[in-house]
Length: 430
Ligand code: AMP
Ligand code: GLY
Image (cartoon, rainbow, N blue to C red; front, side, top):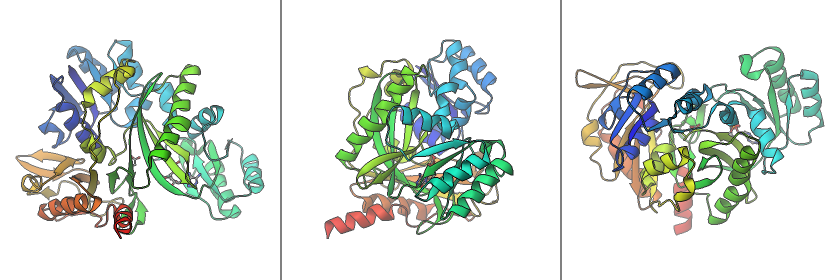
C-alpha cells in the first residue's frame, strides 16, 4: 500500500512510526514531514493545508490511503476532495469535521441522541445569552462556537464574569469570527480524561485512554499549551467507565451522525469529565491528540495501517479487537524556552541518537528540521520523549533519563509529567 500522511508534528511522527512498521506499507509519504518523520517516510514538500496540491500528488503517485493528521486540512475538505478522485481517506469529511469545528453543532448532535453532556444554550444575541446566564443556577463556561486556537473556552467564577465573557465574544469580537456564535454550558465538576475510538461511518472500534498536561509549568501551573506531556492509559480509567463511554457516548454519536446523513469516519478524541463515576462528554476532537498520540502508538500492538484502512473503506467490522500493551507509556514534551509565548527558532539540538538508545524510549520529533546534518528546532513544541515501563514510575524515569542526555540549551520541559498517575500508583502500593 502507498500511504500519504498529512501533517508535520509529533502526532504525525508517531503515526508515521506505527504505519511504517506495517508489512503492508510499501511506501509512506508525509507532507510536509519534519526531521524525525523523514527517517521513516519520504518527505513531500507540500503544506498540510494545500489541499489541491495534496490531491494532485496523491493522484500522480497512485496513493492507496490518505491519513489526515491535524484538524485543519480535514475542516478544509481534504477527505471530500480525495474521495472525489476515489482515494480512501482516514479522517472525516468537511460536514462531519464540524464535530470539532463547531461546538454548537457538536452539542446539538449529542443532545439529540441522548449523550450525557453539560446542559447548554447556543447564542448569537447578547441579551438572550445574558438571560441564560442569569437563569442558570450553576457556574457556567462560555465558549466560542468556532476554533480559537484552544483559547475560546472561558471558565467563569461568577455571573458578572460570564456576562462579560459573552459580551466580549458577541459584541466586541474578542475572538474574531470564531465567537460570532457562542455556547454557554453548565460547569461540570469532576476529573478529566481523554478517550479515543475509530469510526468508519457506521461502526466503531474502541481504542484506549490517555491523559495530558495542558499547562506549561510543573504542578499544572502557568499558561495553557497544546500539551506538555501525556500518558496512556489514563489512571482514572476503569473497565466500568470505559464501557459507559463506549455505550453512552461514542456509539450514539456515530449512529446518530449516520442517521442524520453525516457519517463520521476517522478518530473520535473525546474529552470526558467523570462526575461521581459517570462520564460526561466535554468535547470532541476529530484527530488524535498531540501529544496523546505518541504514548498511544507506543502501546499499540496491532497493525495501525490495517485499522486506518478498514476505517477509511467502511470495513471496520473486519477488525475484532485491538491489542494493547499492559505497560504504561508516557511522553514528555521538550519545548523552546518561552513557549507558549514567543521563542527562538533554529537552535541546535544534539545527542538525540544516544538519548534514543535509552531503554524503552522512542523520541518523536514535532518541530525540527535538519540542515547540513544538524538538527534544529523549528517550532514551540519540538520533541516528544516517549517511554514505556511496567509502571508509571518506570516509564517516567526512562523518559527523563533520555532527556538528561539531550543537549539543547534553548529547550525546556516539565519535570513532573504523570504526577497524578504516579501518586495514585504509590497510594495503591501503600
Ligand atoms: P473544551 O475545549 O470544550 O474541551 O474545553 C477546554 C477545557 O475547559 C476542558 O478540557 C475542561 O478542562 C474545561 N471545560 C470545558 N467545558 C467545561 C464544563 N462544562 N465544565 C467544566 N470544565 C469545562
Ligand atoms: N493535547 C490536546 C490536543 O491535542 O488537543
